[in-house]
Length: 437
Picture 1 (spheres, one colour):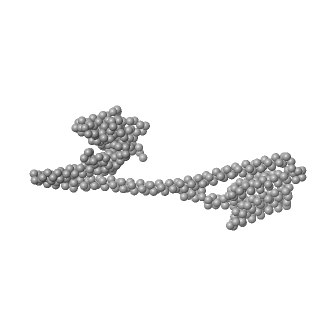
Picture 2 (picture 1 turned 135 degrees about the horizontal axis):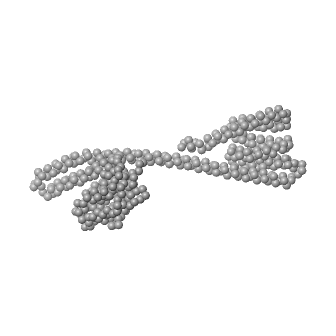
């Protein structure tokens, strides 16, 4: 990127112009020497003077270009050659019409080596005047007077100069605009690259910290389970030994310790499950989702019977690529949510359907439960997020975080909305084939 910026900045551009000018001057020197030798050899003294003058102008330009007044060399070369052409026509009487071809080249020279458009415009007027003198003397108007033919020819030459001037000007302006746009775009790309680099560093730190957190979660759940089991065991032993000796308040305290231990144990189990999922490198296989749902329905049948609930699977379910154990855990967790988060006195109803997309399948899990408010729909997939107190609904707030992790591992997405039964509708998008990227 830095090399690209250097290529379009002014300094390297100037160096290229300097190299071009040196080559032009060296070409003029070689041309002047060759013509002078030729004119001398054929004994053409009149033409020899103009050839020598051209050579001297080239030599003078060559040395001035090496000084700090380098810009004068441009003007000396253009003006010197133009006046030399006038001398050849007026004094020597040359009718070499090809001299007129010099001026388009001279105008291009001005556009390349002179920056101010006003200076280039003055040179165009100067060239038009010299071309008038050339046409005037070549047509014999100095002897026979100005003819209509001469005027027509000169108008054509002036029109050509003006058109050529504006074509060069148009090209130059667009070239400069393109150059400035390229510089601006390069700077913007450089700026965006720095932002991207910073974001990438932040993402790397986030990934590293997230991996450490997941490893810590998995380790902590294992390390805390043993002392927790020990504590609960001693509490139960102590409770049995003191049976009949405790008053009501002391009994409630023992029950509270025992209940809290059970809750913490369940939370550690959920943390352990999250840690296992987070560290899993999925091994993909073809999974029959219809067969998977039948298994879950059978496993959850006692819960459904106890709550007088119903589970309805609508349509034919496809075969997709995924890790069977994780997909089963995902579907089972979503069904368990529909059974647990119900309205008081209302038996749970769960409907499961699938929608076929171009490259994905979208599995919908609808229920008639308490639903999720719109402002909380992005929060519920975060770990330890609970929208209700534990007195209303038991849970650790980790189940949906596990679902989100499983979906992410399968390169899918999960969202929640309101169902047609005024409850929750979880939509899980899973690719038909596991993308390898």
